[in-house]
Length: 136
Ligand code: ZN
Image (cartoon, rainbow, N blue to C red; front, side, top):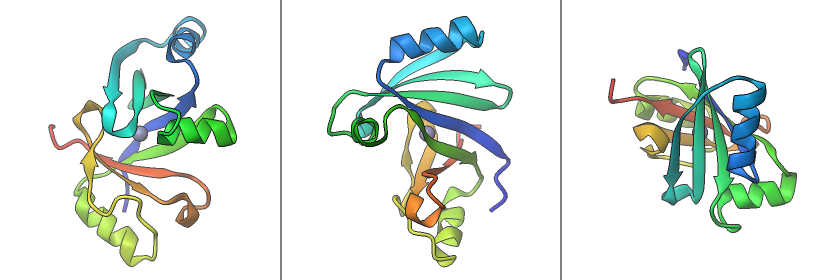
């Protein structure tokens, strides 16, 4: 599959504003984008660390995926996202290798990326996202 880099790390938080303060004031990173992804019932905040981003995720609905995650496991790392090209082919490749897909067809994620998730049961416990920036 050969991802070019880790596109972002998704971190589930209870309170976006408070966690943004930590990333800004303690780590000295700049929040350059806040975006609601209605589809996923989350509000997201983004920071750049080199080529990789930190994506903070606050649930807008207790029944949404992040709401449920926090209820079960508490705050913390939720997923890791790899940058790939030709995402449809990469999904097919994963499926051919026996990996269970959450999304068999890519959908639109934050920042206009095409994204798809691989199921953590097939990825040794790590919810894995593939993303492709088709705008560049
Ligand atoms: Zn993500």
